[in-house]
Every structure is written in C-alpha cells, then in structure tokens.
Figure 1: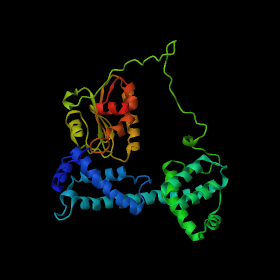
Figure 2: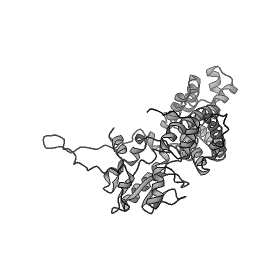
Figure 3: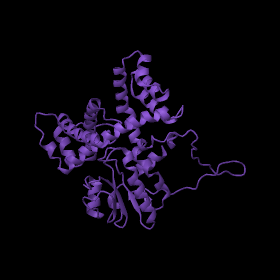
Figure 4: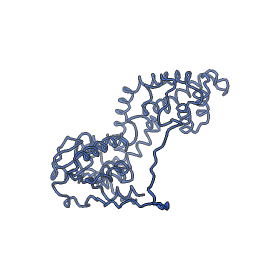
Length: 360
C-alpha cells in the first residue's frame, strides 16, 4: 500500500483529527521504528504486555487522553519521529516496571519449577521438546540450542554440560540464565503453564501427540458427487453510516478507556447512543468492542462476548464496522477471522472487507 508522505505539521494535524490513514501510515510506522530500537535494548518481544501493539496502543491512548498535546508541544527543531521515540521510551519504561513487578517473582519461581520438572519428566516429553525448539529457533548461536537440548531433553546438569561443550561453568550459567529469561520463562508464563509444572505427566493439550483434529464432511449424492451447500445471502454492512437505520445496532471499535475517537466512534456518540468512558458492550443503539489493548488475541474475548450477545438478541440487527482497522492499526485480514462465526448468525451484518478476507 502506498504511503502518502506528509511533513511533521500535517502528520500531527492528522493525528489530532484522528485521521485513520495518517495514523496507520505514520503513527504506527514511527512506533514500529522505536519499538525495534527498544526491543533490541530491552528484549521486549515474547514478554506478556510488551509486544508492539500493547505498547503502541498504550502510547496512543495516552496521547489521545491529552488531546495530543505532547506532540503539539514538540520543539520546532526536533523531528517528529525523534520526539515520538522519546515518548515511546517512557511508555516502554513504565511497561517494564509493571512487567518486572508482576512477573519478576513468578519468573524466578517458574525457572526453578522448570528445572524440577526436567528432573522428573518422562523421556521425550513433548513440552520440553517444544521449549527446546523455541530456544534453538530464537538464537543464531547454535550453542544456545545445544545447551537447551542437553539440559531440557537429555537431563544433564549445567556443570556437566560445561565440560561437554568446553566452556566454563560461569559461561554456561550466563547462557542458561539468558535463554531462561528471554525464551523459556516468557513462553511458559504466556502459555499459562507455570502452575502445572509440578505435575510430572502434564502434557498441554496443544502439544498432545494423540490429539484428534476436528474435520467436516461434505454431503454427497448416491453417486458420490458433492452436494453444494445452500447459498447463504450476504449480509453486508453499508459503507455509508447514514444508510444504517437508527433502530439497528452499530458495532464499532473503541478502547478500554472508552475514549471514543475516530469517525465511526463519533457517529456512535452522536447518533447511536454511545457513552464516553464506556469502552465495551451495548450502549444505546451501539455496541463497543475494545481494540486498542494489544495484539489481535486480546480482541478475541470481546468479539466472542459480542457474538454471544447478538445470539441472545435474535430480533435485533447488528451492523459490524471495520473494528480495529482504523486507529488500532490492524488490517481486515487480521480481524476478519475473529468474526467468522458471525456468518452463521442471521442478525449480524459484516463489512465487505471482512467477507472478502474470509474467502481468501
């Protein structure tokens, strides 16, 4: 997609106006550049709450809640990209403090639990194979993968591995702490497995070797020819909001703080009864779905909640807009799969971009 180049003044003006194109083309581009810098410095990726979208959304909400005053106060001789990187840095530092407070003790406990689990787990344990593979994939240095394999899979102690690899025990310990802090512990915590390591035979469902995958079977004629599925009429949300009846429910993207910005959110406020500072759920003739709290996975529970609400209110019509695809920075192909079950609901209309993405 072609990016329109603007000077700093036009970009700031576009952000202040909650212009979706300026936000996606410039705000997220500058944030991505800053994130890559600080990810290299602080090893952010892979840690809960420190992914790109969590931090970029946090920064955006801070700017939005202050009417973008921090950007308007930028000194004239400082480039906007540099100024935003400084602001993003403060967001990163705050998030790191919160992360260390929440996960610091858990990380130490988890590291100890992993070692205890290694000593009692059966040979060929699929979870340990998975963690060892994560380490090997994460580092270009083959010794990191070799260390993980010897400790996690072969059951050697670090002192024994030092002799085998021709390194000092101190060097092995340093590498071990690094791979635990950067890969193993974050993977365990984000996967929700930390409290299960005391179960010797625990095997997470996602790694079970005998797990049955669901499948569907198409009906056929007596001659074996497939019977085509009945055509389902397309229910497409109108492109123009004025075409949506005031009796319909407008489904729009918001944020957990309920600061309704952007064109569609403003329409929800003015015409459909949305309430400022109410970030989720039914509001008059509108329904808010928070989309600015992290990556796509954080949106899924709110979409599921909406689908449940729509199913319980079959006599109401729900007009879903391109939630998450404007100020939140996502694309239709990112969000559309979350709404796939809505195609089976006769009272939910979807934007054409979502329907197209579901067919690709």
